[in-house]
Image (cartoon, rainbow, N blue to C red; front, side, top):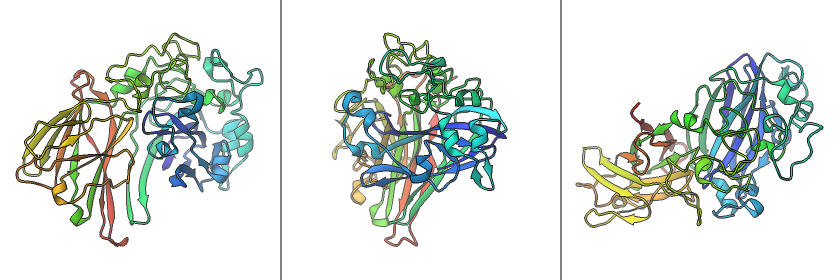
Length: 438
């Protein structure tokens, strides 16, 4: 990840790594960016757990992230915080990263911004900056009840160091995927939501439970989800469009990645579980007050997140080859299509982050380029006449309201491997989207 502060202001940025099943938080910390600062980091599989490390000198809160790196952990979906999905470490190895500006202030005034300012390439005092994110002296450790502090923030000193967000697009975020063993790499740009959080001071104490905010739903305030439909409207789509190409004999693999980054705020329903996306503390009032529930409808999603760890979405695959041949299959679960034999078995999209391997097994076994444990294979063998190893897909969200579609984002990753790291390469292409009618 390469995160650039494009402004002349100091920024406090929340970095959150979410797992693929239900968007539970597996790693959470802050990065303090000085004006025009850049922060870089890598995320990898280390002994079966995600591990984030950086050689960048910008301040992180806690500072241990900068100094020694940090492993993800399963706390948010196990034990007292368990949801209805698996409680394995493997679940942490796939998902997405969320970056949220929490607060902004011109220049580098006293407090955390001044401590985070670089002098000759080194921040002034990252330990002092970290200490500004401890809950206020009058705020006791939280056990139960309303979330304390102004607006449910925990009243850290840093909340006074930074003001409300003023820049509509303060960050430029580039990402790359790298498999050194195979010689594969590909890069792209993160999805940006312009204007998110503008006018709000979303700085919180970096301690439980205050560090659970801000979240993507917090556009109009901490613990407040009233603006979630507005946030969703910026990425709503009725269909996702991209190419497919899997030709093992030629070393070609293509994975589709489709993420629904707001799904948990509606489908992860557990009123008394503060780690759940939809709980009694995150509601229409905000500020950490307790309501009967999260006060959000499940719609536009269809199913709550339930055992064995799924929230299914009805989709229609309209598959084309490169010469206009077409096949159409609709599914709301694991079904067999009505197409003539040989039949194609297609699964729904059950997770927050989904990986699809779309191809034709006539040309060889279909395996994920990302080695994903949650990948679903969509085999079009026998569906296209004549057979083809490549084409494109219109993936329609036919179970969602036509007026909104679903808030979705993603890309394809295409690998071309030749058995030689010097010759192999990768490509990453963002999806195209069919947007709802205005």
